[in-house]
Length: 510
Image 1: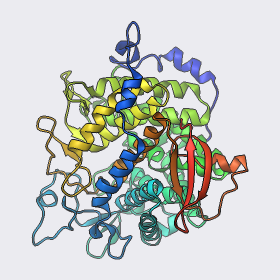
Image 2: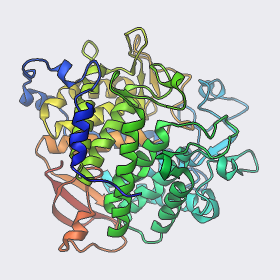
Image 3: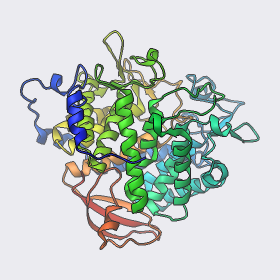
Image 4: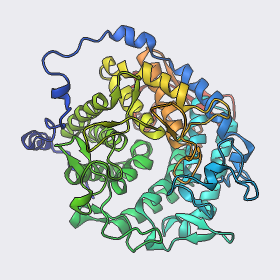
């Protein structure tokens, strides 16, 4: 696939209404007449600096994720499931959150690749923010386990979705695996490469990525397949799912592409642009201002179906906006930015200073809290605040809600679910399960740190572990070293406290 950067797309988007039509609560509806008057200085004075997010990572998140039970035996064989207090599941004395969970998130006989991969990512973020070499060691151990145990035929067959039963059988059959699961198999490997530029890891990443696109993407249909053959979980080959596309972008490509060698970077940028275009054309509903979660048949193209929520839609807008900036596509930039702003306005609950989950068919709003949706909305508001600090107006309140109610103050880590009516956690949702690991809460901390520092005019310091010291006098090399999905000016670099640590200080994050 190759990307199309023609600025003529802007004219087409304007003509078709893709930019102007943001749904019933789009930018025009939200800001009729003059733009609201917001005291940006007051907002920024209430916004935490990056140090608050480093403290949150060290004192809140790592309290749960640095437990001995989290690290595996041996270290790197991370368990998919743990009880809310961090203990491992004991069949003789089962914790209720794993014995009787909400359906669809716990299979105690499965060890999921995506869980291990997301945990590697979490430890990578922890090292990135703090420079603590222990966290890098945990990430490296997880990478070794993925490469030696969870990749199928060294990546030539992608990766296993999970290991099944006591004999830990690689499962399911190759063509029954979801393309989404294969994407998340690359999250940990990808972030480890982002940190280290380890040439031994890159071939595994490229091999699995190429396998995904060669096996699942059909150019003539502009279609990323969900599965190729029916799966044991009921997945069907005719399914057309938003997250089949979105999670190729989100799980590894968006933040990894700028770190790649030039030839790969150009190829991946083209693939990113193609997928973003596909998403805009297939899944976006101007009428409701959101993306459908699936377009397999018309019955699924409505509110209150899977993945039709503020979280998936605002994340997709953020991805499109960032891809537009990366590839020079102004139409994508405008589409993603304007529609993301509209979703923030719709999702914010003024009375409680928190985010809602989704609009409902009866015109009301589901106000319950699901951790990753809150994280995505915070991250997008913080990203837009880099353009206009007025978008930070939500964050002092939503951050306070996160720290007060989403955090398990007793054992660390973040609750999956909090009931809006009581602000109490939903205890049938384990804090760690097949879909919930370190990914979203650690990304939330990183983006809080990056944007908090920039919005306060403070430098951003990040730790890398480059295998070979980069030549920062070479502009092409400097271009590959970035603060996650953002860009910034490198002010200085130096060796860190450990033999693996290389410290880069950025300013002008955008």
